[in-house]
Every structure is written in structure tokens, then in C-alpha cells.
Length: 176
Image (cartoon, rainbow, N blue to C red):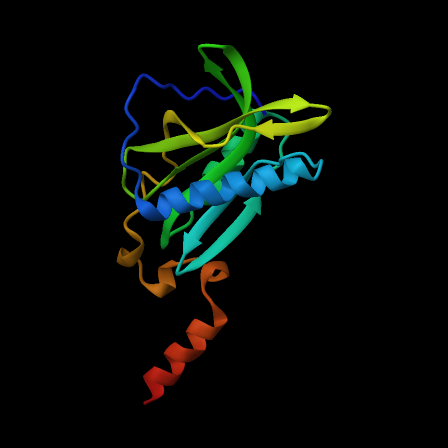
């Protein structure tokens, strides 16, 4: 998936919200693990909802299709605190075009998201990753149109994100 352009005109790394930073790093680590095992990285999202992490893959015939699937999933994730969207792509550096696994993500209501990634080279048919992830730049935020997670009532959150155990506890409390 290399048809994605994330503009970077900033030289200073912005402060990334803690939950978002964790989900972005998690998605990058998952992608690194897949690549180290010889598997391809199918674009995927990770959503933080009520202290849970939900992962969904977004295969497609083109980069645009993968991004459309991811956008659709994230835009409908009412009650989510943050998301990461991870894929294998490339970045332009002073050294030229380099392969990278990239994680883009955002939080509800913010205009822009963030993109970070690991640059890598293939050596003896194995990926060799840079030690530290690099800030790539601002990215589209698929959660720009969502409210903060706490602003959603449980009946507004898609039932696939609600924990059955949470629902049972709530019913017990209501009966008391």
C-alpha cells in the first residue's frame, strides 16, 4: 500500500495524546511482528473503546479502497477514545524514498490526526527496522466528526463494542 501521501512541513514533533500514542505504537508493533514472521501487513485499524482494543483488517484492491474501509469503520465508532490505522507504505526522506510501516490516528473532535512510522530496509529477505519510530506528519483524522467518548450513551455505541460483562453489571445495578 504505497499510494498514500501524508504531508510533513513541521520540524517539531507535536504532543500526541497519551491514549492515541499508545494505540499508534501498538499498531506499529503488531505490523512489525507480522513482517518479522514473513507475513504481509494487511491494512488494519485498532479502536480504543471502553478500555478495550478492537482490531479490524481492511483489505482492498487499491490503497483508496483500504482507506475508505478504514474511514467508514472509524467514523462509525461512537464511544471510541482513539484509533490507529496501520499499513505498509513509504516515506520521502533526505535519503530518498524509503519503505515504512505507518500508523495514522486521531481522537474525537480534532481537525487533524498524526502519522508515525518505522522506516525499514529489506536485508536477506527480512525487514530491518529503525530503532525508534519517527514522526511523519499531520494526517487526516477519521474521528474529526465524532464527540468525545464520554458524550455517548451506551445505547448510541455500536453493540459490537459493548462488553457483555459490562451490560450484565449495569442490569444488576438497575434492579437494586
